[in-house]
Length: 97
Ligand SMILES: [Zn+2]
Figure 1 (cartoon, rainbow, N blue to C red):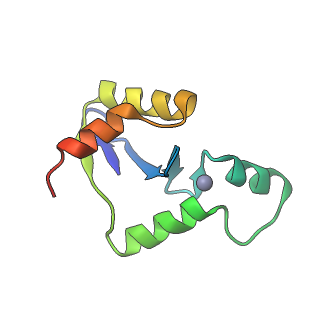
Figure 2 (cartoon, protein in one colour; figure 1 turned 120 degrees about the vertical axis):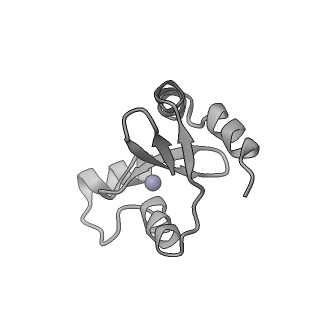
């Protein structure tokens, strides 16, 4: 979970093996699986990222990052246009748990 400390905007990023996905608390995801089933299907669950997101949320298994607005914007753009975020990985590796 990434929190924009300037605007208070909260963003959830699901870290996949090859790609990262933006998952929002209103059961929305940026992966193609979600889009296909959201548009054409009526499945009980949106996609495994959203399902995994809720499991992680319940078990508190997520990393909380607080970044400035410019960095958060950069992460969103990287995920949307490149499929994954280098900045996010860098921020996560700096994080001590
Ligand atoms: Zn997804």
